[in-house]
Amino acid sequence: MDDVYVYLVPLPPSEKEAVVPCADGYTVYLNSNHDRASNIEGYVHALKHITNNDFEKNNVQEIETRAHS
Amino acid sequence: MSNEEQARVFASNLNYYLDLNGMTQIEAAEKIGVSQQRFNTWAQGKAYPRMDMIQKLADLFGIQKSNLIDVPQNVHDNEYYLDPETARRAQEIFTDKDLCILFDAARGSRPEDLQMAADLLKRLKETNPDG
Image (cartoon, rainbow over all chains, first blue to last red; front, side):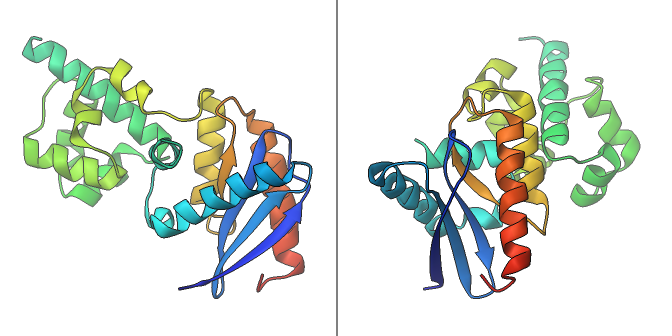
């Protein structure tokens, strides 16, 4: 299992989280302007992207449609 | 649906996914191993490709064959971001090797919101290249 680093950063209100690959795993940025429940939802969403190997795929619309279903 | 209509629907979907993936006809034709002229007849709705070619295109775009065959309404049902400009920006941010970001953003997010977050994360990455 890759390492997952988590940071709280002030993202725009419409975004719960962002996830990016890094040297030894992934970095998850949660929105520091959101509450704890939203942060947990965002973290779960990020883990979905990681476990579904979404970074190996091409199409963002398809990726997000599946991740939000 | 007549053969002509089927070819037109296919062309519309093909052009949509080319645009979404920022790919030219020439690049896509090379990747699936057909001539540019042949590819262009599909993109113009003048010819309908064989099913094995449709499968190659679906694999190239990371989608189902039905996304290329069905009428556009069905394609749009499979879209997460509602604003085409937001979808285009999200795709650019994901495809950019220096960014490669996936967001959990609202469907109605504005393109400038995604860009603002991408700029912030890029600065953080530059500050801490290992993180």
